[in-house]
Image 1: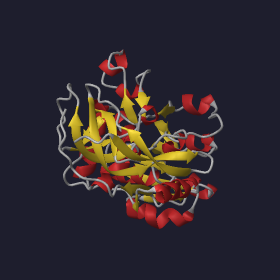
Image 2: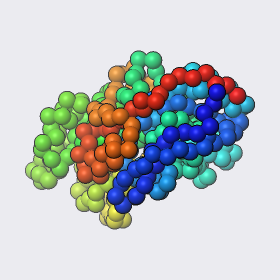
Image 3: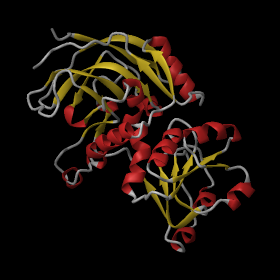
Length: 341
């Protein structure tokens, strides 16, 4: 029978990044909802925005155990994954244009009754994705937010094989950016403040490595068609805009604490641009997963059991920039049931 309560790991103290185990009543499934038995959930820095008393987690993989009355494309027993987005209005111009991820009324995991740090989640089936059979659940989980975040700029901005793409920051996002850009056929340039990252960056697929604190290295770098900025630090943006080729794009996916300031002349003279990028539409999400499966793209992982202590450990390691490079929590209570509404 369907469980009456779900065991979840909720934020206890936001400032101390501590957790507690909680029993939460199973939310009633709406017509488009499914109940997913969580196998594993990756941990993303965005999870830090989850308020006290709620379970974070939005890069989860599991199997469907119950479906709502209007669910037609998914079935009980199917392995699926969910990401940052929970829903959209499904009615506005951008939704009708297949861009539900930028719907003005979009909702995300913080709006969910329970996030992925739990035994089960209830999720809108229209924002769940089929996982390629060749891909392990642990490898797939981080792709559902981090993966789509670095894939979308390549897909949205006409990046071609042979394009020179700089990945700014070699971390949880950046190392996946290197892998996706390499599989896309790009000449990949890793841009990092730390020379210690060079060996790993090249192992991930970087063709070139530049220490951004070294003015001579920056000066000798050939122009880049795109820079994907994965870091959330305050930067000297003009120095990076100057690295772009004519019509090059600086893509912002990391949010800094201070406003971005650039002399407009650096953009106008060579028709360069600064653009923002937010995850991807449901169609793009599935294309990204299929692309990753075809090209054997997988993240570098730390894997821990899902419990109170390791939820805290994951947050602590990410906050201190110690994670190498994504953390996945595995649920020992995972099992395939066979419920159906």
